[in-house]
Length: 131
Image (cartoon, rainbow, N blue to C red; front, side):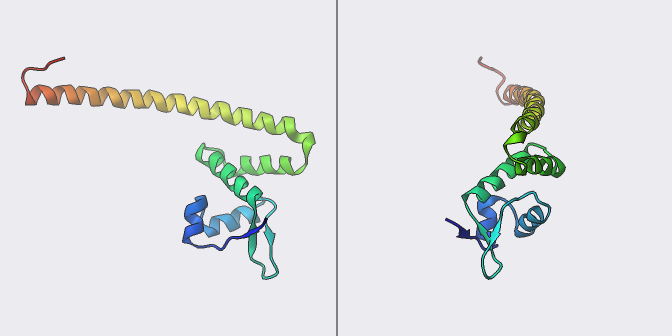
């Protein structure tokens, strides 16, 4: 079933993309298979919404638009490119995991500083620290 999705604030909040961004992605071939009705309004079905979610996940994890476009071009070629697409996702997954590990290290440093501040603050407020 196709849904006529108008570009308004509610839709932007729902999918996380602005109307101009959706149009740009469609124009650049990043958002494939969007149909139009007799009034030339875009019609989004469940598959389109899943593509938007996938694109948002890739963008949020640092994949450049060129990489997303490459993946989609490969997808359009059909099942013969499954191995290629899997490889692209595997490489991106490794990058995301490395980024997450680095972010976790940064978080540990921040938590350490917070713990020091808490200890110092407690010492200033109460000369008898109970551990």
